[in-house]
Image 1 (cartoon, rainbow, N blue to C red):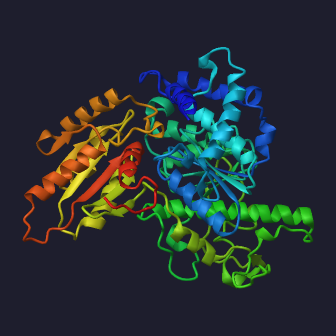
Image 2: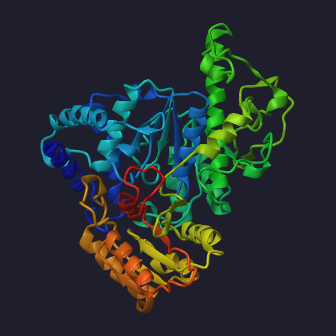
Image 3: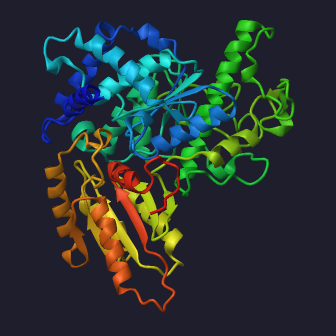
Amino acid sequence: MPFFSKKMTQLITRGRFVSTGTSYEVRRIPGRSFKHIWQQWSGLTLEDVDKLSIIHVTGTKGKGSTCAFTEAILRQYGYRTGFYSSPHLIHVTERIRINGQPIKEDHFAKYFWHVFNKLSSQKESETDMPAYFKFITVLMFHIFLNADIDVVILEVGVGGEYDCTNIVRNPVCVGISSLGLEHTMLLGNTLEEIAHQKSGILKENSIAFTVPQPDNVVNVIKQRAIERNCELRMVPDFKSYYWTRDPPDLGIPGPVQEINASLAVQLAHTWILKMANRNSRLSNGNEADNRLIETSENNNACAAKILRRSQFNSTFNGKENLHHSSLLHSESQISSVSATPDENNDFSIISPKKTALALSRCVWPGRTQVLCGRTMDFYLDGAHTSESVEHCASWYLSKVDNKGAKRFLIFNITGDRDVLKLLKPLKRLHFEKVYFVPNISGKTVKLDQLELQTTSSLQHERCMRNHEIWGEENSMVLKNVCEALSHITSTFYSHRNTNNDEGKPQVLITGSLHLVGAALLVLDPNLTMKTNY
């Protein structure tokens, strides 16, 4: 639909940063005006949003994976889920998922026009229209409010306090994944400033979970929780849970994912138990929603049953009796969630088998993903902080260390980041060749693949700078991902000794998640988790 594409292009253009020098103090004002757009123009009110049962998640590293794990757990228990995430890898519909699947294009288009026409009819000029992410967020709420879903897993875009997802007033629970330096011109130059912005999603009478953080970060989050009368807890180590067997192998691999999975377990189980308690109070035990209790997998009639406490401890599931952890006070420490059996509960509605199965089956393309192709193997991981790149490098090395094959790197990064610090962990991996390319696939450019924040010329300039920082001897700048893959093929196979047993090239694609998306458009355009390349 050409006209549809034209309107999307306008929104994408509106979504670009106006100036790389714009401070956060200036940039945060439009975030506040989002409520005006929401209430006055789109036809929805905050009271409408209150009808949704929401789990709100922010963080620097792992917030997307945490949301994916959380959604997978809830879906495994039979709940109907809505999941809003960003950015997308290939198609914009990936951002809005119902029951684990991106919404259909015709469904997206239907609500796109509904919202676009509503907003367009109120504008006085083109600048009155919301930017790309704000528009998609408005669209998402319209879609979820008209969908038959039980719960929304809502990932913050950038920051928290002034993010346009933060119109949510009554989340059931909130998660904060690992924090690090990112978007410093928007969020601040220190971890404390970033923690302040991220913890802006904490709400009164909600319950928040976070993962182990530096003390200075924890102190900021704790103070914000006190100010907002929000209960705050630290999640336990993933291996310390009372699993029926060994901890499950996570569907999103890598040691760093264990803490994200632990956060997801607490969020999902807390939501389940809160909904169960609420429905129990409403029904006095007579009309409880059968979806809130364990369903027999072997009974075709789906007879309901309650799991005995001995099958699963309730401290694992996020504590049915939530009052056991009191609200934080200024002199108190952050409360911790225990992972040991709790004999104080009479029963549990949480199944360790279902939780483990959900975690093991969860997939999240572009995050510690391996694609084994015909001519080369690919390792894809969006990593935009120094800590994330460190984890990525360790993960990649653990996969290829014993293969004895040549290693290649395709890299790009955007935004105000310390490139020297990001590249340092990758230097130790001894790549045969390194390619710095913009976030461009090289295939026919799709509207959905346009980089929202950075022009292609600016990306090329950054690639040249990264090339110089790395060292020009074994690195080069190319126009797109396809060119890099072609160069790897020609370099490797033209010099390969046909008599040796040297394995396929092992290609790491990391840095910007938009770069990973551009690569997947070439390698696996339908996100099947397989490639024939």
